[in-house]
Every structure is written in C-alpha cells, then in structure tokens.
Image (cartoon, rainbow, N blue to C red; front, top):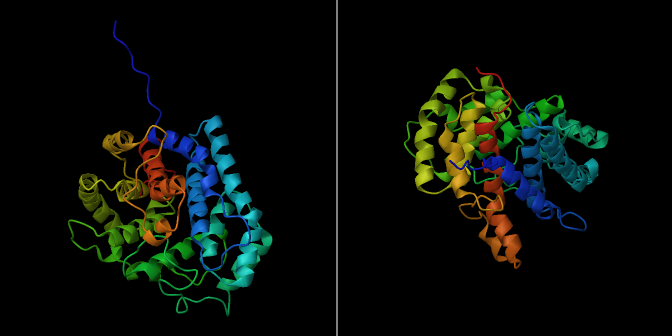
Length: 324
C-alpha cells in the first residue's frame, strides 16, 4: 500500500509560526524612545507591513486571519496605539514616521493626533521635496542599503503613505519615478545589492505591494518580466534568499504568476522552526554590540524570514491586485 505523505504547510505559514514564537523580539525596547535610533521602529513596522499585505487577501482562513490580526494589534499596541508616533513627531518632525503609521491606517487603526501632525508636515511650510533629507540624515537612514537613487525611493514610500492616508502630498510619483534606477531600465545581467533593494522598493511603492500593478508603466513591467528571472537565478546560486524573495514578490506585484520553484526553494532552505536564513546582518556595528546570541540570530534572519513569507504567500495564495 502506498504511503501518502502529509502535505507540508506553506513556507509563509511556517514563517508566521516563527513570528509568533519570536514576537517578543519585535517588541520595542522599554523606556523612552531613542530619537537617534529608529531601527527598532523599522523592525516593528516591517512586521506590520507583512500582516497588512496578508490581511488584504479574501482567501485567508478564519483561524489564520485571527492570527494575523493578533500580530497587527500587537504591533499597534507597541506603538502605544499611535501615541508613540505623536511623541516622536512632536520632538522631531521625522516625516519617515508617516510611512510606518500609514500601515496601521490600512489595518483600520487610526490615531487622530498623529494624523493631524503628519498632515501639517506635508502642508504649506512643512516638508517639501527639496527639503527631503539626504541618506544618512538623523532619523532618515534608509531601511535598506539603497543605491544612488535612495532619496527618490524613500520619497516614493512617502507618496504611497500619504496616498494611503488620503492626505494631500507634496510627493509626486510621476516626478519621482524618473529619478530612479528602474526607470532607466539598464540592460544588466546582474544587480548589486544596492540596485536590487532600490528596484524592489520602487516596485513595492509604485504598485502598493501588488494592489495596483498598473502603477508601473508597461515598459517597466515588461523589463521586470524579462530580467527578474535571470537576477533571481543569480541570487539562488549566491544563496541570497533575502533579495531572491523580494524579486519574486516584485513579479507578483506586477501581476505575474510565480513559478512553483519559488516555494520549493524557500521550503528547502527553511529551518524546522520556520526561520529563513539571511545573507548576513547589514549593520556589523549593531551586531557586535549585541551580546545575546538569540538576539543576534534574530537580527541576522528576521528580515529574510519576513521577505520569504511575502514571496511564499504571493506564490501560493497570491497578492490582491488586478492584472494590468
């Protein structure tokens, strides 16, 4: 009699279990926030973003939706249900906080005072495109090592955030996209890490993480269809699951159906506890300052696990969005 092997849960499902087990690692440090170090907020906002994209899907089972909602609420509570944003914005007008807060408005959480402060920042006398801080300015360090177009990429993130909140915005996607590396569609066979992170985030922001594939023009979408599989193969050989996952999600964001090997590759690499191994933490200084080995392990692998969850979800469930 043939033995039927039990079907393994998808990579994203096992990754979700890893997040739940390590939820405390996403928590903000106790005490007043460090105005010069937004990294802990970034980590928590990345978790919120993953839950927000998953929560869009009408195909989530009731129990999974409940788990995703619990993680979203955890992140919102860590931000003091919005009060922390107000505290930080009142101390320093870090406009990048709007990209974090807007995620929660998409999840149904609203903090009126934070919203009012962000509206002031983008209004007359607030932050303009010309005043946009350069990479490395206090509180505005890029969430990834973007390329030379980093300021334009971050401004596209602001444009998406303000559009999601329904607030008037000084950031124009039409004006910013031509300033990005992707808009020039260079005929390259490989990408540097910086180019790849810029490209993927331009796609995420322009398509609202797959909800608006038509946010990118036809030429850019065709360029990505042709180039992404080649870049992904190079990353597979280099065992960089972080960028591999992000580029797979890029294809899903423009309405492409992902090949089965995306899920297979991620499943083969996934640890028993659901973690996906990262290519190495980007800040050696922060890693060296972390004595706890469990915390070090988290820092080295949390982002790739989140990226892999999104790629696996796109491959097995699909992102919400219309095919262009």
